[in-house]
Length: 280
Image 1 (cartoon, rainbow, N blue to C red):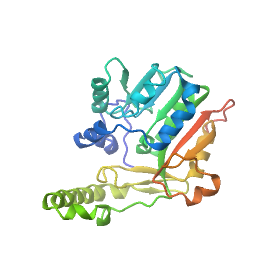
Image 2: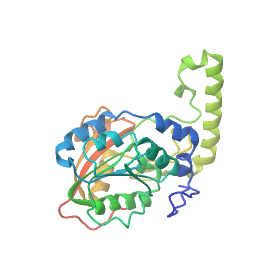
Image 3: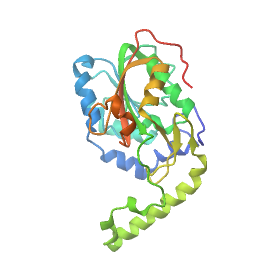
């Protein structure tokens, strides 16, 4: 994957990070307001447990999750590695703590600084494999003993549409000339991004990094099957892992192989006794 890791959150040659600074992407995140069903279910499950506790909101984007978390606790910090996203949050929620940070580099936070960490909307999927493990270890270190961590990640068993697949556009868009022109422009842009990024795709036994349709094929996205994600979490010291489908319901183990949801939410806790950090 073509990712250059810079310790500066504001300066990057990483195409994924550059996408999250693009005006069209920032504007889309500004409009996002609703919790996803799995997020709502997780927060309802944890509400009593994390009420007035220390919360870290990673990849806060436009602040979609902020009001829901503030309703649970005012001891809240939101972080993002996009300066534009952080600026937008500060404007929308004056007086709330938002910081420009890269989740790979959080050494200045003390161990056990938070009781709940949320990394929503697949944000962890836009770094390479080693950086992902770094983030998971950081979240483990930053949680209090028995603290909770929730995040979402793309499901490797989902159906992934290709850049050249015109069926990813709704038919009715072609009935209006202006909409058809915009659709054609989006198709060409998507193909252009895909041709530049497809050569960086990776396919491994336990995960893949794929140039999917997110933000017109700008992004390289990490995909992992449910059982492999659970193993990955166990290997860095999390336990009591619950996977949630798009509908907000827990996915039974018997259904792991049959689940085709585009992404899965995971809720887990920092284990009381953690194994050595041995994830690969």
